Length: 311
Ligand SMILES: [Zn+2]
Image (cartoon, helix red, strand yellow):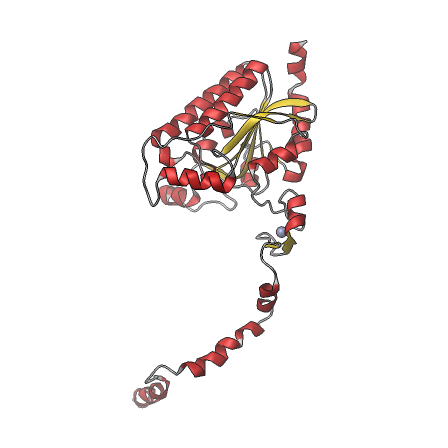
């Protein structure tokens, strides 16, 4: 009984009758920069340093660039452009791009928050690419190789008619010229703006890979973060050898969709390269800085029989 009478008494003074005037709040806000760490961040000029999401260290951008966008501290792999990869993997001036003028058409006249035509235009200007892949023939050490490298910066590396057609053509060129093929994927999947036209690319690219394989020609699929959906469900998972960069997210549907559909908890590390390597889907995990020497080594083995056939 006594408690009940005391409680209202305690609440009364805590209940503010009016919002305190701004002058009373300001000193409290001004004290915040005294917390260690917050002032230092503000002094760092933008565009010179990048904070690594892996180890939280600040990395000098130039150092990051020189290390192929891999954190020198914890080896976190940052995204890299298609041309950045090609420059690193192929011998200087050996790469000749193919179909580089091919650009997507807005067949469905798709309109969402922005039109597909606008999005294409924006991404072409942003990346300097016509679409989400660069294909061509270049040399990796002593091997002439048909190469396709996807660029996630272009509409999430999505596979529309152009990506599908360029892959098909470079694989067909490899079949015709009896060359090994290397495709480096990074993609959110099929391009929704092209509807069925983008889904058809899965069958077309897979068929081209099958014809290439029937000629006993090797195809190496390199998976990078992220490789998902329609791309993973077609040519990316069809390599004679499938290698991945560390900690890349690889899968078909996203983890949330799978969790909701199966109504079960997903195991730890689900859809990472390491998880899939343990279960046999991936043959090797290779750091970007080692990728060229490893690909060259794999090609040495895989092309042994091929060379014999030619002679
Ligand atoms: Zn790091």
